Length: 82
Picture (cartoon, one colour):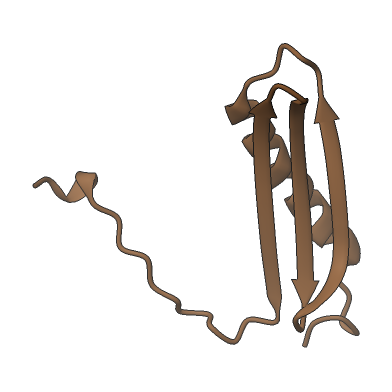
C-alpha cells in the first residue's frame, strides 16, 4: 500500500478550547450547509446556510468550512480563548 493511500489521524491538540464542526448536505429537501463552533465546550456560534439548487454536495461542504473560518476570526477574542 502506498503511503498516499492511508491517512493517520492523531489528536495533538486534545485540550484545544476551540472545536469546529461543519457539514454540507444535498437531499430532496435542498442543499444546505451548517457550522457549529464551541469554545470551552460551550456553543459560541451556529449558522445554517441554504445554497442554490444547482450546487453540489462538495460545494456545500466547502462553503461550510469557509464560513466556519470566517466566523472564528470574528468571534475570536482574548476573553473567549486563552
